[in-house]
Image 1 (cartoon, rainbow, N blue to C red):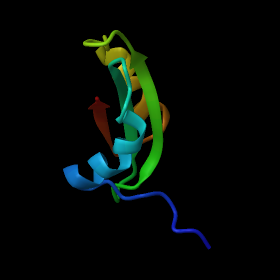
Image 2 (cartoon, rainbow, N blue to C red):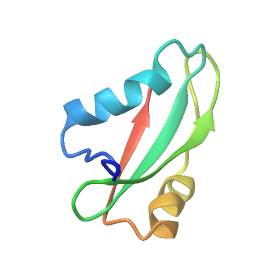
Image 3 (cartoon, rainbow, N blue to C red):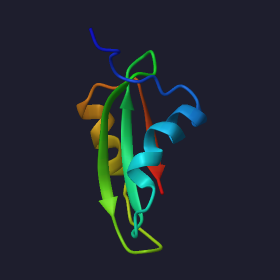
Image 4 (cartoon, rainbow, N blue to C red):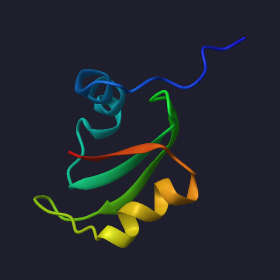
Length: 79
């Protein structure tokens, strides 16, 4: 059996998980990470991709992801 989804219960774990996705990007991007009650990842979804120094997000877009996923918690991440 596989290890299952990663637990992201500290800033260091979140950084390690997102580093590969964000490193080397030439534009600002934002992601929402939906987590279950144990801090395990349900979904990582890019919600915005912008310009070299900015991207726009709104509360409705941010909150739609964890609500849809029935998440207990979420992380908002940007590069």
